[in-house]
Structures are given as structure tokens and as C-alpha cells.
Length: 410
Length: 69
Image (cartoon, rainbow over all chains, first blue to last red; front, side):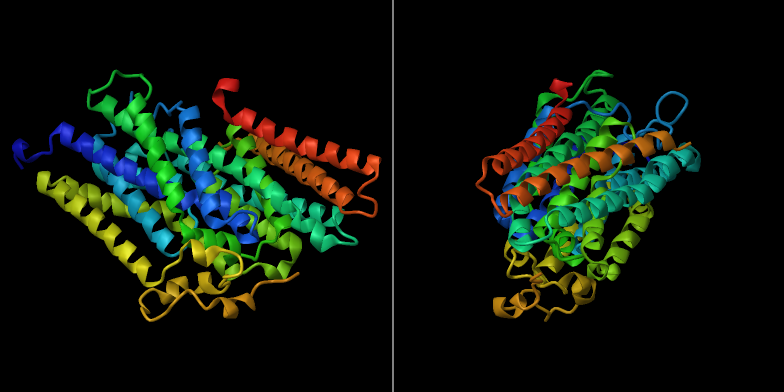
């Protein structure tokens, strides 16, 4: 293949920035559920109000914290001196893997870690581009695999105990009315989780854009993100958050278990405590995995039989395959991109086509702000999501009167 | 090697933080919704409990904003 067919640097950098911002957007709508699924489920916040608060706090959080990572992969890939140079093209392919995984899990209503998808994508692209030797397997186990098991475990145990505690203290006369007051507290804890997300997640994209600009020679080595980079990354994640991944909100708020205000408050307290502790004490945990674990713990703390293990099992399965699946998609994208200019064009068309196709699929079985509001709950729906894809006649939204009967009244 | 000490610390701090927040919020709610919500002592206790929660959340915000650290 002649050099003239290769994609020139400015074009590749532009493509990486465009894909990075789209990834940032999917990151936002994937993770709205982490903070806002439980307050929406209990009626503490109206769905649109909840996503607006989350969007604003993500925007603010992104501007507050602009310290970006010095390496793209955090040691997962042997980068820099003595290692390999991660090229913009590998980042391009890695982002394709991460975006496809984020959209697919959203379509199935499954919460899954955007960071893991991104790491998976980078790993896949780097293996094709530089071989297996470029991957650091011990870092992979210590930073991805084990934390993925430990995060839900910590969150689940803490939320379980916190729920038991809340129920024990508020038991007695007027228990039901009293416990409804936890709704007021939910607004604060959920907002704290949102702010934590904003100060953490937008930096991933800022880091990628900045390191790509440095690698291409458009920015001095070692310099921080430019203002326009901070601004567009903050806006992309806030917009994604506002759009709201309603499918995932439904799974976390009513799919795993039907959350009550006391449980919601306990779950959010556990999520905030675990995320703050993990980010300040040097043991990184995924927000998504913590939030999901907290919801399961809150369900167990109320009543062991209230947890739908089939839904929880599907989520766990998704976590297990996040990294390898994103890696395979990215590896294919990198293989195609290596063909040169037309390979990159094929990749761009493919990721655009897949995104449009998934969006079109989602329209057949719509889940929106109206379908997650209390009173219109379709509690069995998350179980059917996967099955109903392809069954175009199926409608998720039942008449309100029919759905009311399924709302737990305890 | 995985840093088990850091993990144990994170687990302990998460547990203590969450139970303190939930415990005091529950206490405040219990006091306000109890037999004599209007007596001075009960109201003061409830306000003190909720204040602990507000301080807890404010401390969380403090930790999140890098310029404070």
C-alpha cells in the first residue's frame, strides 16, 4: 500500500476528537442511571428534573476537575518509554469498540462501565497494532478484573447494612409515612453521586483528546487540556446525561428490585461513600458497578426475595464480557483501518451505521421519561428487553391503569 | 499485586460513611415522626441529626472539588 493512501494526521486527529466526543455523550447517558435511577423510581424527583440536575452537575463537575491522566490506559498498555506508542489510529479503533459496546448495552438496558469498554477497545486495537506483548496482564487483573468483583461486593454489603439500619431505626408506628421522608434526602445523595461522576468521567475524554493532540504534535508534551477541549467534553457528557439512558434507569430503578425511599437513600449513601472513598484512598472502583451493587444490597436489605436475580445475572454477564467484546470490535476496526484511507472510511461508515441501526431498534420498543415515572411502572419489562428486540409488535408502555397494579405498596 | 490494604480501607470508610449518613437521617426522621414531634428536645435532636447529614454531604462536595484540596 502506498503512503499516499494513508490518512493524514489532521484528518485522523479530527476523527478521534469526533469519536471521543460521541463516546463522552454515550458515557453520559449510560451513567445517568447511576445517580438518578433510584430517586426517579421512588418519585423523589420527576424524571426530567432528575436528568436536568444530573446534567448540570456533570457540566459543573467537568469544569471543576480538569486534571487529566498522563497515560491513556493507566498502565494497562505499556506506553511511552520502553513500551509502544499508542497511535491516533489505535485510539480511533478503540473508541469504535467502546461506542459500539455502550450503545449495545444501552439497547438492552444493561448498566456497564464505560471505562472498561474504553480500556477494552484500546486493548483490542493495541493487540492488533503492536501485539500481545504491549498489554500488561497483571495490571489488567489488578485494575479491571478484581475491582469488577470487589466493587459490587463492597457496595452491596454497605447498602445492605445501611438499609437494615434505616429500617430498624424508623420501625414502629407511622413507619410507612416516616420512611417516605427519605425522599427529601435522596435529592442530596443522588446529586452528590452526579457531581462525583462529573468530576471523574469527563476527564477520560479530555485525556484522550489532549494526548492525541500531543501525539500528533499539535500541543506541547506534558501540557494540560486546552479550554476548548474542557468545554466540549463537559458539554458532550452533560448533553448525554440530559438525554437520559431511560432503559438503564428503568433497569436500576425498578428492574433489579422495586426501590422504596428508605432503600433508595441507603443505596445512594452507599454509592457516594464508596465512590468518594475509592477515589481518595487509591483503590479505583467503577461508578456503574458500585451503583448496581448498592441497588442489589438495598433490595436484599428489605427482602431477600425482592431481588430479581435473572436481571442481576444478566448485568453480571455483561460486565464479564465488556472488555473482551469491546476489544474484539476495536481489533476488527483497527484491522480495517490499517488498509489505509478507505479502511478508515469503512470504519467511520460502519460505526455511524451501527449507531443509527441501534437507535432505530430502540424506537420499536421505546422507553422514555414517561415510562420510568412512578405509577407507570412496567416492572417486568427489563426482563423482556432482550426477548422483545425483534418482536416489533411488542409495546413497552402499558395503559397506566394496568401498570398501577404492579406497584409495590409496602 | 492488588493493594488489599487500600481495599480494606476503602471498604471500611465506605461502611462508616454510609452508616453514619443513613443512621443520622433515620434518627432525625424517627424523631420528627414520633409521639411528640413538637417538644423542644425532640425537635432539637432531629435538627442536630439532619445537621450531621448536611455536614456529611458538604464534606463529600469538599472532597470532590479539587480547588478545596
